[in-house]
Image (tube, rainbow, N blue to C red; front, top):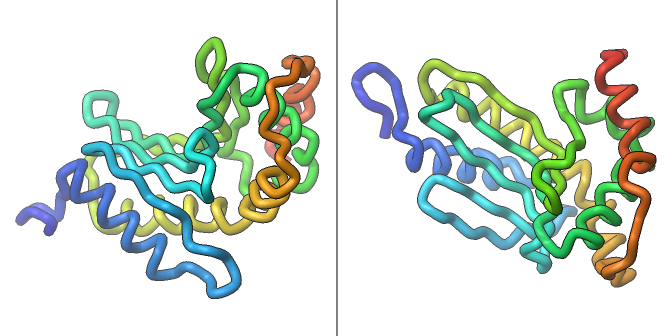
Amino acid sequence: MPGKDGTLKAREFVFFCEDQILSAWPAGVPEPTRKVMWTTLQLHWGEPRVHFELQPMMGRRLIEAGLHFEGPAAMNEAWAAALGSRADDLIPTLGFEWDLEDWTKSWRRLHRPYHFERLTADLGREVAAELGRAMVELYPFIADRLSTEQIVDKPVEPERSRRKWRRRSRARG
């Protein structure tokens, strides 16, 4: 419930966004499994190491929304490489604000940051709409990779896999 000034607390914001995403969920796409860890929402389709995540970071005034690959390094790299190979199709569809990056030494993510002054319902609707749209758009890619059991621990060339994505997304059109 928003405060008198219209501001939501971080945990309220997470649940508000989740409600917004799921209330607009299309009939032809299976609903994801959810996991909430205080102010972090994770949504996935049977493989928790490949999940969408929403997390407001109050101290940084930043909301991070994206698709995370948080398994073994080679698995994460393989997923990022496969996603990077679809850059030409995905960048115009998702938008140039999305970036595929090496997040940590082994984890990868396709994410969209939002800077904010206050967490509000209007911001929640914007973030939820964008994340929900990305989830629906990326579901076929994820489902295909999960169904063909491509979650394997095999080496992939890291730089080559994302070069195209970064070049295209930074060109902004």
